[in-house]
Image (cartoon, rainbow, N blue to C red; front, side, top):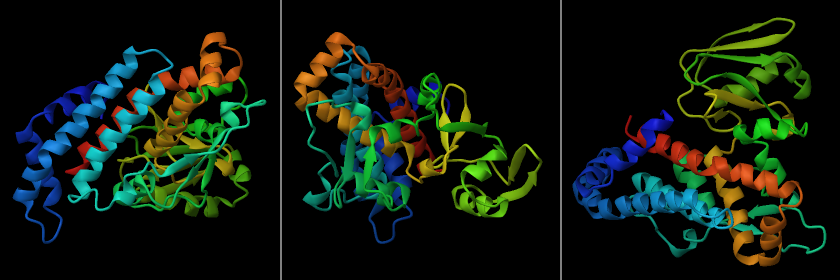
Length: 317
């Protein structure tokens, strides 16, 4: 979905009649459900989730940097819940799934840096629930993530991190293209044979039509364009390019929206509870933390709207 199409798509769902029609189309594949009754029952909640989410994001864009993490995180959470409602008509089934599903570690005051901070995924809560019911994937074999690691997975952070020689992803193709081109050196980075590398990425792609290799590159031709991009493939919205981790340690099948979930959860917790660090960071603008956080926050709102808007749009295709 083009960036300019996103606002009109969300606006089209901002009435009860359209929301009910959209949900009814989603629910038709669910056995044993009274589609008309359930779509009518959920249409108001669905519409308000979207409306509240958009409101948080809009106010976040206009607001002070100090407030953006909190507003963006809750904007994302509301739209995420709207997405869940299209798959899970009885959501929330229990109180255990209402928690965020992520925890932040206790911070040491001395020499604390955001990029070295980490979050831990909990067994229950919205994060794990979204993994299962939106993306049909297990959370991940990892249960802790450093902020530095997560930031390097976001394509729009790549140019910024390149200034510090910390970029970990490369462009391998264009959105809506049926060809992906990998530098041959990536096979050495992954410590795999060409065949093993292809087997590694095959489950993450549409059917592979043909593979060609030269001394410099590995060309993968697909039967059809990649419709949805989940890890390890992520898209750069401005460049309309597909990014892939150059280093093996960054190969992870976590959907990008959940990367933003983890980043914004931690930033929102910091903005609320680490008052001294957050206040001093924004007042003095000292250290690389400030530049990284500010740059990330210029990306976050648009990426949230696009990723979740595309997920919703594809829901009934």
